[in-house]
Length: 108
Image (cartoon, rainbow, N blue to C red; front, side, top):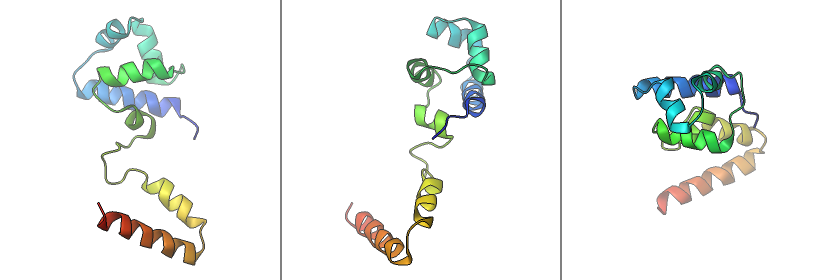
């Protein structure tokens, strides 16, 4: 999976704004410049995993949601990947996978 840094930055900015936090607050929390936060949010610079994890905590979200755009708690999480993987299966394999998912669901 390639990371789209422009989308990542857009998600960071949207989430930061939704929790009513400023770039200045984020910069202070991370001990970086406001300019660096701006570059991250515009997708101009690649953010390290450590910084992304700290930033996710600061803006009260899951790092996976920032990267993928979908929360692991969302019912649609991994639908696209699952559908893509299923497309490569034979009808018999798809049926087996469906049976397995039903079994998994019924044995929670």
